[in-house]
Image (cartoon, rainbow, N blue to C red; front, top):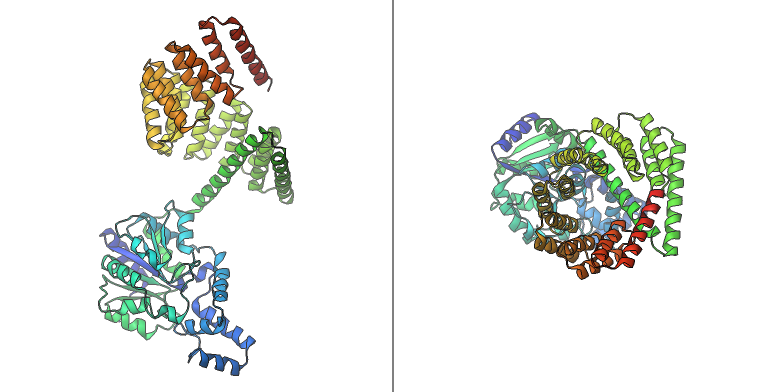
Length: 579
């Protein structure tokens, strides 16, 4: 039997990948041990101990006879019989037992290079007898690729060898699909899997890790003379005895045995071989973005609730805010040097519009970790909320200095520059944001607005077109493009874009204002009045819309209505200025 050291195997694996050979990974329970999930052998021993506690020797022998079980010595071959014995007569309890031990497990660090292989290379297939979710969890944590998870044999036909998406084939079913864990379920692999895997093995060279071959399903297929293998690498724990079945299979298929010290130790060298970066920052950044997205969504919801007359919902919102604020305060009190706790507390103060307190808390966070960008960015957002644009820009600039690859900060600083009419600087920031995040339709839309404000209408059109290409239902981009068409006096196109925006978002007040302006320019005053009135109905505090409608009334000679609209606009402006 051929045996190669791990170092030699990994060198060969890297070179083979460079020569376009494709590999798949066959994972058994040994791949999940370092993630906190017991192996089949560990579970078998645990169940034997539990049986001995529950029953007498005579009772166990009687039940063995009834279930036609001969041997319950702990081995991978006897695992399924031990399971049958332990959970007889209700195997739903066995499923529940397995779910409990797997549900809260987290992928060990060896799953990082595996996830990168699946997401970034043509080695995008895992075949596993495991029920757990370690592979898909790792892909979620470490990559942007969502896998195709085939957790039932009826879905096996959906596996395509042409897809670049990671594929996870759970040949004993997934955790929540009544997984196969009894001998009668595993007499042979389901035909649906046999057909697919025979094709798979013609394309992919299998690398086996942590699989002991104790089942009679996958092992039976691998032994089958009709199964053609490109090659075979079997990574086996050095400390464990290699079963004869595996020895014979490796010899029969001209494969190689690779002694290993564990799943993590086997996968770890791939980080260096493929120059994978430290994932810590990505994990932290992704988590922060999810938290921030949630908090912004919650703030938006809170604002909407406060604008309604539903007192019950307002009371519930107030109760939640009070409780969360109290929890955040307690967290800071328990650990005054906890940077992330200060950030959370600042968000809570921001939600209840205690902006001054939020800024003070963030200033404290900056004292704790002056080289972290997040507190500067969040404080910049709050300065922007209270229209202190110079302070916001200063904080965004510091955040960019500390973390120059964060597209969102360039985007936010661009908005601040836009508001103080420094359009060239806004364009520069939106351009940098697009460079870092090319698929961000919002950045194109906003840069289009800035170009429109500098009367560079062709460039504005290009950006609006790109925004719509990226997001075909982007009502704001249609509205803005319509307004730009109006500026260059292409009125039919302007009206068509406004109509499209209204179709996509019927309650979008600003687009009625835009279309009203077009109708005013082409002297269709009745239609203009209808649109301005609709905008005001949807959003009664639109100062500019009252002024626009006043212009139409003036053109129509209705002086009283002109004065009424100007008076209303002035009242809104005074109220806004007071804030």
